[in-house]
Structures are given as C-alpha cells and as structure tokens.
Length: 257
Length: 332
Image (cartoon, rainbow over all chains, first blue to last red; front, side):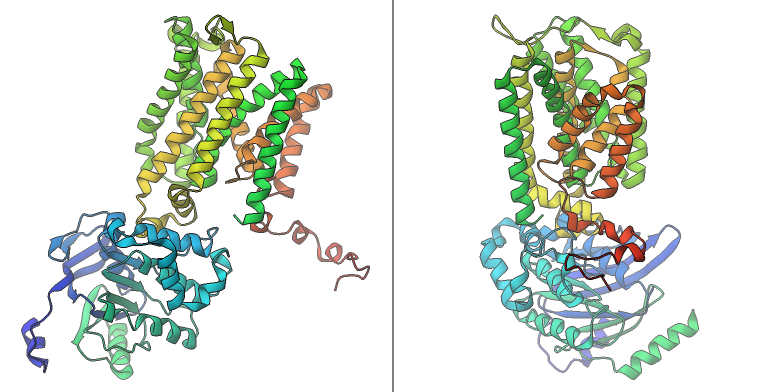
C-alpha cells in the first residue's frame, strides 16, 4: 500500500520522517470492537483528515492517540518511541494535544484560567512566559481578547471551539488532534476556525483532524482516511476526496451495516 | 469565581477574624467556648472544601479521619502518656497517612460510587471504635485526655486553647488559599468540571485527586485531635451520621469553593442550635427546616456565586412572577 502511494506522488523528494504513527491499532469497549487494525502515520507539519459517520470510530481513534482509552492491540509511536502505555497527561508533555469532541472547555473557569491550564501543560523548557503565550493566542483568535475574565460557559460555540484550540496550542504540541472542530458551528464560523488552523503546518505542528463531512480546509491533507465500522474503508494521499466520493463511500458503508 | 465574589470572600474572612479577636478580648466564657467549637468544625470543613468544593470529590470519609485524629490523640496521651502536642501531631500525621492509603483504592471510583465506598468506610471506622472496646473503650469512649500545656503554662483554660484552635484554623485557611490559587487549584477545578478532559490537559488526575483527599483527611484528623483535647474525651457517637451531615452542610451551605464558606457554615452549625436550645425537643426540627431553607434559597451556598444557580423566582407560578416590579408596573 505504501509503495503504491509513493509511486503516485510526482515529487521524488524523500518522505519526511514519521512523527506520530498508529500501527495496527485496535480498541474495544468491553466486547464492542470500536477500532480494528488501523494504521497511519503523520510527519512534522503534516495533516491527516479522518472522515466517517457517527460511530465509525473516529473519536475512538483520537482518544487512543491521546491515551485516554487503552489499546487492545497494535501500538502508537511518537518519533519512533512506543508510547502505547504512556498515560494521557504525560503524552501532553511529550507533545500530543487533544481538542476533544464538544470542545471540552471547563465551566466555572474563566477563559484565562482555561488558557493557563493549557500553558502549564507544556514542557517547562518550551513554555515561555505566560502573558506572552496568551498574547500569541489572542492574536490568533482576536475574538477571545475582551473575554479573558469571563466564565468560558458564556462564550458562543465558535468562541468555545477557538478557546479549546488555543488552550491545546499553548501546550506547545508537536501533534494537534482535533475531534470534529466544526461540530455545531455555523459554516462561516467553521471557516474562521479552519482559517486559524491553516498556519499551523508552517510552524511544524502536525494536525490530525476528524470530521463527518468535507470542511473548508485550505491545505490539502497529506492523508485522508475514511472510517466505517472501526476500519479504514478508503485511503488517499495528497488529494481531497470530492463530495460525491464521500457520499458514495458513506452510502456504501450504510449498505454494509 | 469573579473578582467581586473573591473580594466579598476576603471581607467575610476579615470580619470573622475581627469577631474571633473580639470574642477572646471580651472574656465571655460562653462565647469563647462556642467559638472554640466553631474553629474546630471549621478546620474539618476547610479540608472538605478542598476535596468537595474545589476537586469535586464526594467523600463521606472525612468523619473517619476525624475519628482517627481524635482517637489517636486520646489513646497516645492516656495509654502511652505521650505529650498532648506530640499526640496531636502524631494523630494528624496518622490521618494524613491513612487518608492516603485508604483513598488509593477509591481512585478507581468517582461520583456516587465514591460516595458509597467512603460512606462504608466512615461507618466502618465508627463501628470499629464502638466494638474494639479493649483499645478504644467501646461505646463509652476514652476519658481523661489531658489538656495542652506550654511548659508549666496550662492551656486547659478555654481562652488559651482558643488561641491554639484559631491558629490551626488560620493555618488551614492559608493552605486552602495558597493551593486554590495555584496551578493545583485550577487542576482541581478542572477535574471537578470535566474529569474526562482533564487528563488530556496534562493533568495527572489521580495525583491531583489523592492530594485533595489527603489534605482533607489531614485537616479532618487535626480537627478530631483538637476536639479530643477540648473535651478531654472522645466517644464513637461523635463520629457518626450527624457529623457527616454537619461536614457536608458546612461546605455546601457555606458555599463550595469559597474561602470563607466553611467559616460561615461552621458558625451556623454550632451557634444556631445553641441559640435555639430554648426550643427543647423542637430544636432538631427547626434546625433542619432552617438548613433546608438555606439550601433552597441559596442553592450555591451562602457565600457561593449566586449566578451559578437559577433564580428562585423561576420556581414561582407564572402569575406570582408577574407581581409588580420596582417601576410599579406589572411585569409582562
């Protein structure tokens, strides 16, 4: 499979080293197999888009990469090191940051306190000054600017999503995992969110994005995986799947279940 | 919590400090003894405010660690003839150690399940104190606990012991204040708000939870030890369901996660029943009605952030809600 995709690529440049890799990863919830033998890799600054319907195993994949759910089989490596059994809070220190489905902002805590938690999660050597780090995020998401003291519950859905992403970025991730960032957002807000994400690759941050439907991504993902019933049903490299193709894949998936 | 509420919190603590000093200067033995009790209750409540108010850990086991501190102080002084100060310290340290060891297996549990397990532990410890008569004196308890002394200076006089109690209380408040505003405090509140996402924020959830429970257990044991030294006596019936109820009420009615909340809660729990003693047999009913009233009218506690709760008027039927407003016109 890898050889075929390599030959399809026009550029003969050597493939950059894989930063985060899932190798034949399987996850079960009790007897239910949520994910079966899933493999993919992402290099520094790269983008992987994971598509699929509800229950396809997308969130499970993200949770497995973040270390929130244990693997039943296979392994996850970060820069060649097996981190399969590393607890979630330590993975953050090592550069894997998850923006969970539904944003996961912390009610009762102010916007600033949410950001401080993210900043504190970064490895000490990479943290930098808090105010400067918060300032960087406010430049990226100006809408959060006047709201630092507000309880984050009072934010709009789009602002919460931006806060969740800003909080994750403050932990200085090498890999950012985004679980359905467009969920519940108006198309124009989704576009804003993706606009902010567009520059991350240039800074060397690898992003794995899970979505249900096509999203306004400016960069063409290095890899697109389409999941169905916990398995990869379609994989493409360097191309964006068309709406028709997705519809066909989803429909096909619907027939199988 | 917003700045305004934090400022009000500080004001209440300052007012409490003034009241504590004034009471000592007044020399009124009734009030000094009452405030000794308030201080001792406040110590356990401040600890529980860390576990429940900040970290969201529903643990009924505080009373068990209170019993550990009380019995350890009583037994070390009466049976081993240890210095009461040393016994108090040892009892507190034992409470810390036991709250670490006993809470470790509970890290697998949360919410109602943690509540159930810790309730079983609390009742188990009380039952042990009642039944292991050869060690604990059974239902009668341990008599003859000596009072604290400083050299030849006895602290048996309540106005002197009072200083010890309120110093301990100030120490606990300081620990609460410093941890609450640190990263650990934010991590606790994150765990209370969203335990599921806290780990992916780099928070070591198990470590933060056990730290909260151990701080709570330590303060509970200190409170138990002070209790034994004040009454010169411990008995199992102090450490039962009534005390569990008091501990929860002090923190919840005082205002979870508020600095001054446990002080207000402790004052309520100690002083209101005392002042109502003329009601005789109806005292319990009236007290419980007052407690319910506080909880319904101030669901986030007397010092909690009222914005976190729905308005009480929302409970009224629409017709009553449409009563004349301040402008004199009927509401729509």
